Each structure stands twice: as structure tokens, then as C-alpha cells.
Image (cartoon, rainbow, N blue to C red; front, side, top):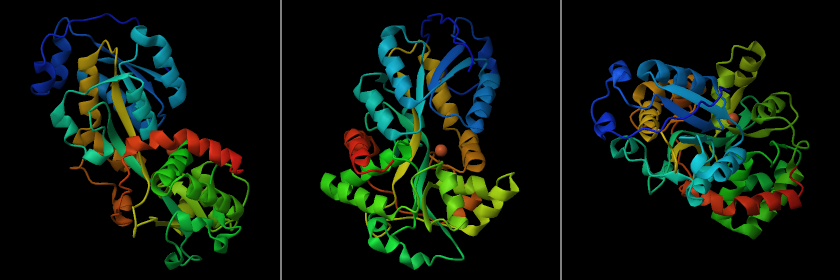
Length: 350
Ligand code: FE
């Protein structure tokens, strides 16, 4: 983490800087323009670091990054208020983006042209945040062992026929918390409580490890179905670690709930903070992250789905086929988050 530097307030000269043509390096010489951008981010991927340094090179803007958990960053923004050095809030959870908006910690993104690159279902309806990538919460199974015609829905994983076969990480993880929230949104609280009970009863082991560890346990024969984020499969197939590659190659992917509401997704997204001192730089950063060049790199280096509708997913990811996305408005997730966490805890999903 770089140290946050003192922020020098500046006067917004004209909106032409952003809406006009993107001049890259030349703009580095424009006087009286802030040359800083301060980002609070939950994401800790190499691709983000690499793109941030490219942005710095291209614009002459110094980017300071504070990395921490999403809830911690939200608290920090709340406590700091007007004095916050943060210009951008970046997270990998739509519920947290929704919460940031609801808490009044964000301001509207003004560049409509950039926002229009992103499908409406993965950005805020009032332009307070936009996604830049998304991922599906899928089932991973052993190609050689499982007949995919036995797979159907998240709900089905609670059926006693899967006793001792389900692998999933802890419910304290935000990926599962968002999944549970989506289940409450679709089926209501009582049905979701019963689902959690059934799922816990079917677990191959007490939850441990991360998403990738669940799929490794599938290949090790500990269980049959792993609940996992889609990009991990891409990462494993293309891993530099031969062991991981071997596991990845034996796995297949299944998109649940295709005959119904669709597969649950979550996004990585960002919003400009309410009290940002470097609004134009933040707008420029959003434009940069959503550019075809950056989006292609997210797709090919992190195996996430690019949010820019003009950019294709990585070819491995494309080979899994198109899928129907859960139509739930992502910002709705926030409504059911807390309830889901309490229920998972009460029902023994560790
Ligand atoms: Fe992850």
C-alpha cells in the first residue's frame, strides 16, 4: 500500500477534460490540474495493480491505493466524512456498492457515454456506481465422474440425494453471503433457511479453504460438487502451477438455474466518493478501467467477464457457453445480506 499523500484541492477547469478527446500523455502538461487519485479498494489482484500503473504512465496522475476489506473501507469513509482522502471506492460486491450509495458515501458518475458501455443490469440505475467485471457463482464437477444431467439448481443442492457430496467455503465469505441474499430475494426467508439446513446436511466436510480448494477436493474425491466463482476455473486451467492446471483440466463447469431465474452473479465495481477532491481524475480512471484495452486484460488475465458489452470474454471462458444471468437487481442484494448472515450462522454453516 502506498502512503496517501496530502491532497491539494483544485478547481475544475472545464468538463472538456473528460468529455473531450482523450489525449493521454499530453494532458500531463496541463497546468493547475490535480495530478492525484486516491483509491480505496477491496480488490487485490495483479491485474488491478498492473492497470493502475499503466494509468499512471498514460496520464501522469499519481494513484495512491489503500487496500482493505470492503466493510472496513466503508466504515473508514463514514468516519472520515468530508475529510476523506478517497476519490474512488472499489469493491467486488454489489451489495457493498449499494450500501455505499445508501449511506450517502458516493456521488453520481457524470460520463454517460462510458456508463452506456455497461449493461443496465450490472450498474446502478442512478449512476452512483458501475461494475467493471462480473463473475458467476457456478458448480464445478469432475468431468469423468459426474453426469451433468444430474445437476440443476442451487436449491437442488439441499436435496438428500447429495448427502456428503457438497463442497463450499465458509458462509463468512462475501461470495456466499451474496448467494444467500440472492436466494432470499428469489425464494423468501423461510425457504432459504430450509435450503441452508439441507445444504449443511449435505456438506462433504466442514467448510474450509477458499473457492479453489473446494474444486481441488472434488478431484481428490472428497466431494462431488463445488460451489465456486467462474474465474477460478479459468485461472486454474491457465495456472503456472502444474498441479493446479491438472485439477483445472479435470473439472467441468455447470451454470445453475438456467431453466429459471438464471445463475447468480456478482460484480466488481466502483463509485466516486461523495467528497472526492479529484473528481475528474476519478472519472478518467473509470473510463480507463472500462476501455476496451483494460477490459480485454481483465478478461484474459483474470478470467472475469468484462462489463463493457463490446469486449468478449477470454476464449476459455467463452468455451463454457453463454448463460442466463439471475435477473435480480444486484443492488437488491444489500437488503437481504444481514438476514442471510444470521441465518447461515444459526443453521450451522460455518
Ligand atoms: Fe476471488
